[in-house]
Length: 324
Image (cartoon, rainbow, N blue to C red):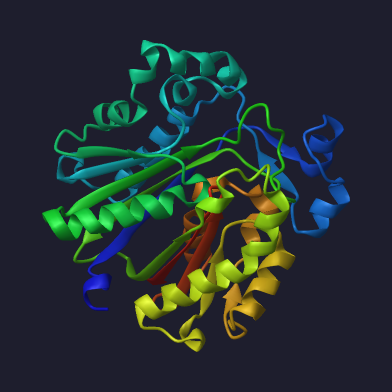
């Protein structure tokens, strides 16, 4: 457990597009599958919808903010891990993403948003990696890779950046959850950091690789597999269920979180839900954006133990135990 706590999250920042839409407005333009009253009952109110912003633009903005907020010399960052759309899709404004998608089948596929981030941020000493196919668990995957490389290669600082937009032609709903476009950046530091990472676990079930075809089966397996991932995270951290002060969620429906917390035996823990109504499900950034806001609001305080959990299509269940 001591080794697991050697890397911490020093800083978190995020960026959102300018435009917002209410659940009712999304329903009026046919962007939802469910009746808006259902989503409102689940806690959703407004989401952020990119129009002229690109995933890369928001990712760059989030990364710049965390480096500035922590007053970190870019030359001291030894690793950049990027998660987000590939090539031209990442670089195109959201309103033109469908037109950019075919370029992935051309040499434009090799236009690397991860390498461009390194260049524009001045991270000249940083190795660069990019992750894909982890959906809403992308930042958890980035943290996992960064922790491992910090330990194995002695990297002192790592920057994890995710810029995720919901697919342009897919509406705004995913399994009764209303989605936002957003980017989030984490600055990890070996041997320190404001938020110590004490444990982590991931469960992947490849049987659910096509969530559209196996939609009902995904729903059926969600809770039992989530409980397994949460308990594995607590074991890795050396925590008991009663040691958890806060659950910092991905922004899916509040009732589903209340059910999951009962099933996982986390009745003592408090659930941070402010982000659900404020911005909906911001894909890969939810948990860390919520952690940032909960600390800034004074709800989560130094010494509190927080459990972060997320699910991603593919299908991945993942947890992170953090001591604030």
